[in-house]
Image 1 (cartoon, rainbow, N blue to C red):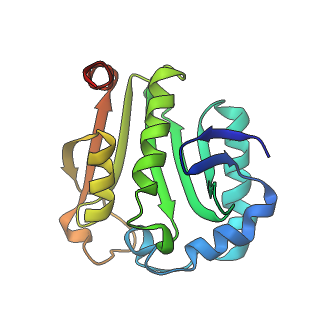
Image 2 (cartoon, rainbow, N blue to C red):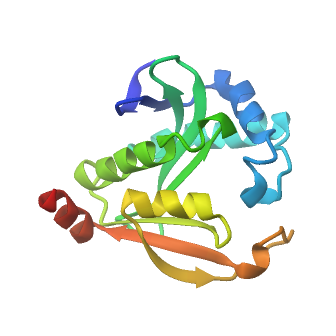
Amino acid sequence: MASYLETARLVLRRFTPDDVDALYDLDADPAVTRYINGGRPTPREEIRDELLPRWLAQYDESPGFGRWAAVEKATGAFLGWFALTADPAEPGTAELGYRLRRAAWGEGYATEGSRALVDKGFAELGMRRVTANTMTVNAGSRRVMEKTGLRFLRTFFLDWPDQIEGGEHGDVEYELRYDEWAAGRAAG
C-alpha cells in the first residue's frame, strides 16, 4: 500500500479494513489506554464497526488529514498510529495525536512521526496552528509534544463521564503556530 508519509524509520499509511486485529491488539494493552480510558481495552467489534469505518471515511471528508497506521520500515511491524485531524470549527487548525505499542515507547518514534506530520501540516496542508491534548499527568506524551516543538498553552478541566486516575489534575493543551514553526525551520 502506498505511503502517506515516510520518515527515516517509519511509514505512515492509510488504514484498511484489514487493520482491525492490529488496532485491537494495540488497544488491548492497559498501559496503552491508561490515559485514554483508564486502561480498558476497546472491544474488537467497536473497532471493526465504528472506529475504523469512521477513520476510513475521514480520508475522503478531509483530504490530507486523518489517522495513519505507523509501520516500522525495517521490519514492516505495525507500531500504532498518528493523527492529524482538521478542526472544522477552526479552519487552519489541526489536532495532532498518536498511540503506539508499548514496545515502541522510548525509541523516539512518537517524536519522529509527530514532527513529520506537523511539518506536512504546515508545509503542504496550509495549517496555521497545530494543537495536541493529553492528561496533565501523562508526562511521556507531554514530552513528545515539547520535543515536536509545541508549547504549553493551558490546563483545562472537562466533566468526563468516567473519572480515571490522575483526571483530577485536568488536561493540558499544547500548540504550535505557523510563524513559530517557520522561524524554527529558518533558524536551523
